[in-house]
Amino acid sequence: MTKNGEHEVEAAHKLRVVNTLDENRWRAVQRRDASVAGTFVYGVASTGIYCSPGCASRTPLRPNVEFFATSAEAIAAGYRACRRCRPDQPETIDFSVEAVIALCRRIEQTDGMVDISEFAATCGYSERHLRRRFTAVVGVPVATFARIQRSVRTRVALRSQVAVTQAIIEAGYGSSRAFYEDGAPRLGMTPSQYRDGAHGERISFTSLVTPIGTVVAASTTKGVCAVRIGSDESTIVQELMTEFPNAALHRDDEAMADVARVLAGAVRAEADASQLPIDLAGTAFQMRVWDVLRKVPIGETLTYSQVADRIGSPSAVRAVGSACAANPVALVVPCHRIVRRDGTLGGYRWGLEVKDALLDVERLHASS
Ligand SMILES: [Zn+2]
Image (cartoon, rainbow, N blue to C red; front, top):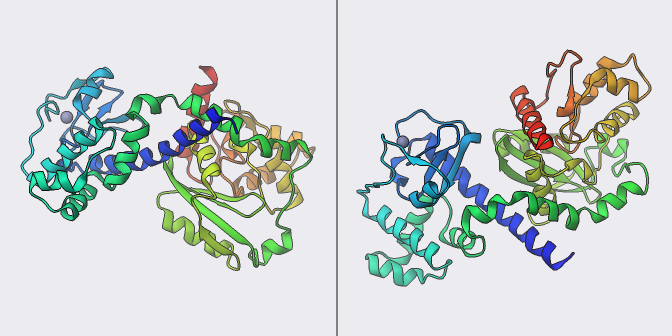
């Protein structure tokens, strides 16, 4: 990996951390939680207006929302202050919230080099109390917030996601691309092992919050074996445990970091998840369908009957639909790129609105 590649991959990791912070902020917006007013503002791209959390105006759609630490940043990005919540004139009553806000600003100004206990003392709080209030108000611990501020100078750097993804592809895909060029996809887990619930296999998983929902990804030592989209992690993990009852299922964010990065990029149409090594079990027919699906590029779609043609079974259109529905690895086998001949979406295991959103962003990306 090149030096530059390492740097970019590190930036991509930060991106995930920031996503978590953003998700906490988003929840505060949804709850109209005025107690966090002053810690951030949010801009609504569709209206060009920025608000303070707690604003009584209509809750915007998540894809239109971007977060800023301060009013000044929102204004610099071209937003106007909302007349209803007056985010440019923050009012806070809770003094501990004021201390937390002051600490946020200090961390930003000093690139995270703040002596927290000293700062707490100047505000009249114990370090422990201030840290607890910070986590409650901001949604992430001080250290996480500081880490974000320290090396990635907020949004500006993070907006260059294309470059980041490019680097990921260059840095991380070398081996998996070679893996595919060597020949047909390998079946790491044999069908009998699969029926056995992956007996004795070690399966690592991780999860990431994305604009289309929570994505949980799981891998054996050979490749990705499950990618699921849902509303909450615990339900999805429960499903995986049922599916692989005899495997040792472990959360391992570190081992799964590369996969998570690619999936985070795939959701934004900036990375091609079909390049990830896979470890799938299915019937010979399903494997053929999934293989064709992995070759459909970002921004393009195939109809169910086109897929049937490509696998040499033109009459098996319905069976192709079933194989798409049985796809165990969302995004990696991009079954969302298969649509009906009349242009309507057909089905999607993880919800039609998710399919619609993915196709939308991919079309946009491909045409830009
Ligand atoms: Zn407002």
